[in-house]
Length: 160
Ligand code: HEC
Image 1 (cartoon, rainbow, N blue to C red):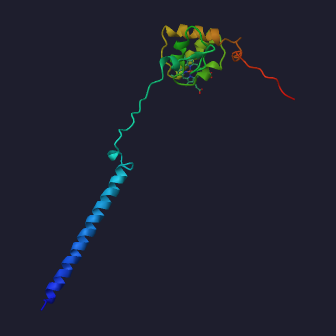
Image 2 (cartoon, rainbow, N blue to C red):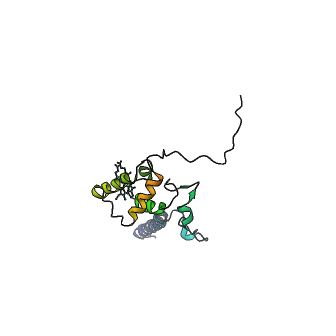
Image 3 (cartoon, rainbow, N blue to C red):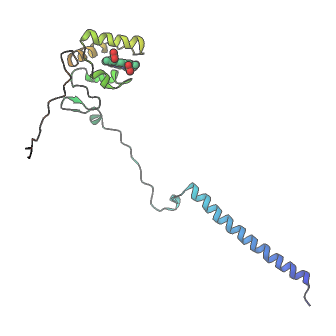
């Protein structure tokens, strides 16, 4: 004759085994989900190495490219002292603030002085003469700041 207590014990053991299996499954699935949060693309298991992203700095030639007599990056006219102006006059404000102005040497010098006194512009040293000469030449009052003439235009006939 069977002992009812041992039957109870058996089913208790079965239940606890089932709970153990369910718990283990939860742990596996849960662990996988946590892993998915860390590595959603499963990249650790992907056989191919991740593509290298090579960042090449802009080539020097491109960075300060001059086309049709215009320094493309800033819009300054090509001329002696161009790079000195680019390096000293485009740090705080756009080059446009400079190129939209027309002054003689005296005017440019006093604008520079004003910036030095009120806007923390540094002492330009010998470069000041280079800069003033450039500006007074290419951004003088007579110069209207017209754009350069168009070149290599392909005209087309207007149709009625
Ligand atoms: C240290 C910062 C700094 C540098 C470098 C600098 N500027 Fe300025 N400049 C300023 C500030 C600030 C203003 C005022 C901007 C505004 O009004 O919004 C200004 C204004 C100007 C103006 C307009 C003045 C006006 O009356 O409206 C001109 C022109 C100018 N700068 C030319 C130059 C030139 C040429 C150089 C190179 C020598 C130069 N800046 C370099 C800070 C600077």
